[in-house]
Length: 191
Image 1 (tube, rainbow, N blue to C red):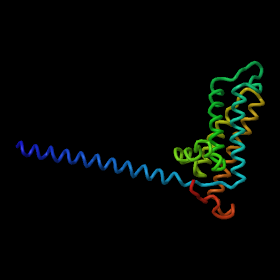
Image 2 (spheres, rainbow, N blue to C red):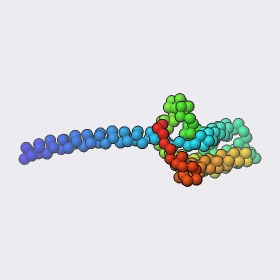
Image 3 (cartoon, one colour):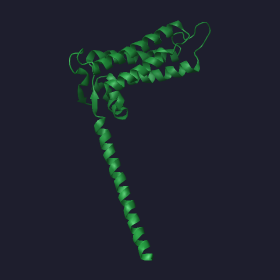
Image 4 (tube, rainbow, N blue to C red):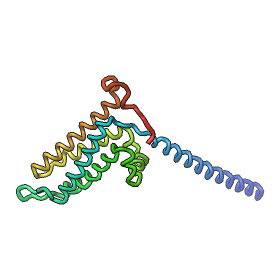
């Protein structure tokens, strides 16, 4: 009985060792798979890239100006609420993300490899479909920010509307190959 128990304990530790080895092997394989997947980046045409970069910078600048109250954020004595302030804070960072997504690879990666890290950690931003839905999201929160000031209301409606339009353009480039001159949207390059 003691011999049988010792045999079971020995096989249990062997099984435990095999399980640990299997988990480590699986983790290594998963890490390699993620790294390989995230190196494929879908690129937009140059005109779309330029417009996206410009619009991302405009969104960030408008957010900073509104947060610092450089241009009157008050109208009729009503100041910005907490919700509007927090959303402006987020749209500042989202504007920078939009800029880095479509900036020239050598420029964006000169800043601590920002674009490469961005695409590695947030792979959906490396695809046209992922970027398009991200632009829809940022565009919708920007569009519906609707501060009290007529100037900021117009500014954010314009910024949000154009971001949503850019998202639609990206989806058109990706999925409507017959109307966009070939498989341009499916072009891939290592990045």
